[in-house]
Amino acid sequence: MKKFIKKNDFIKLLKDEMTISVGGFLTNGTPEKLIDLVIESKVKGLTVICNDGGFEDKGVGRLIVNNQVKKLIASHIGTNPYVGKLMQESKIEVELVPQGTLAERIRAFGAGLGGILTPTGLQTIVENGKQILEVKGQKYLLEEALGADLALIGGAVADDYGNLKYSQTMRNFNPVMATAAEIVVVETVKRVSEIDPEDVITPFPFVDYILED
Amino acid sequence: MNEKEIIASRIALELGDGDLVNLGIGIPTMVADYVPEGKHVTFQAENGIIGLGPLTEEETNIVNAGGMKATIKKGGAFIDTITSFTFIRGGHIDVTVLGALEVDQEGSIASWIIPGKKVPGMGGAMDLVTGAKKVIIALKHTNNGQSKVLKKCSLPLTAANQANLIVTEMAVMKVEKDGLHLLEVHPDYSIEDVIKATEADLIIKDVQKMKGVN
Image 1 (cartoon, helix red, strand yellow):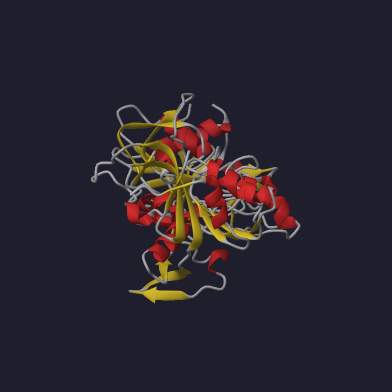
Image 2 (image 1 turned 90 degrees about the horizontal axis):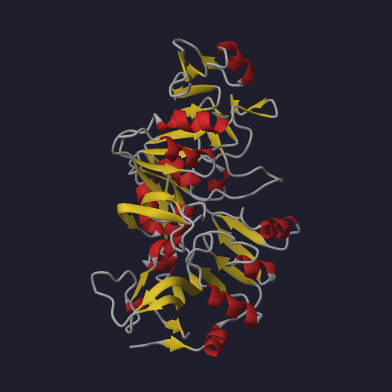
């Protein structure tokens, strides 16, 4: 049940204007080798979904510095000044989403839901243009589901079947992003022959490909 | 003690035995250094740790919510973002301590954007202040002589009416239904000093000397 993919075949999956979700938190758990290949592919006009804008020399920040990203959907961009510069020049669109809302929007897509109801962002500019619904006397924002064409998963420990667990805090957005994309590609930090079924975080059916070393 | 140490040490007294606590970046992070001995507090980091330990120089894949190499305490757990924000938004965090650019007498908080100048983003802050049982705001009382404790926040909000306690180097203030109560004043300042440095209307009834500072 191994589903390894060679670097060249991974590059063939990439297309201009794609939406790509990328795991990681301030690049902890971000698949840097897969990012290398996206840079090598020279695809452009990407919409990138990631917790943050990474750094200018690390994570999705490198795709942004390489001017491959048309739109970034993230909760935080403060660690990558280049994002702010592109925003001022109107060369990138940035949608800032509260971190918990971002995670739940992705989860909703993976779980076949249209969206979620959250109190986060009420009475702030985050609610602009969104429906407010009342349930049992409590107001909530309707936040729509968010999926991707391709998910790039990092920090993974994979077994021969394609099951995954994750190294330490590299887990973060990776398991949820692995549920919410047309194609899911994984970069491992470690390979094992078998993960105890009680310890599997991402079961193999969510995984399409594992990048060959 | 410098101003930041005063704020952090005072806030540490607010943490209860057995509390699950999330500390923001900056002054809030320093609160962990002042937890009184014998008090057992568990720290959560929103990137995915229950039982966050001290920073480390050693090789590790563990980072804290500021992206710095950190450790996990015995009995702790690594969690994904969904579980982390289930704790945060679902009311399972007892106390969150966050910095802010502005806070006002109605408990509204502004911390994530200065339009046209700086747009770092909200990260997990909006969820934290919405979901935590108690929200403590840690900030310097003034910025270049301008009060950061206002009648009404001028910057875009992180959340409306969510702050419970405001701790600065000068004072401890509590947000109540009837307004902002001045509870404690640092011994280096008088009540008049605090009033002068505060744009918000302060309700002054029974003011104590700030606890936990010498």
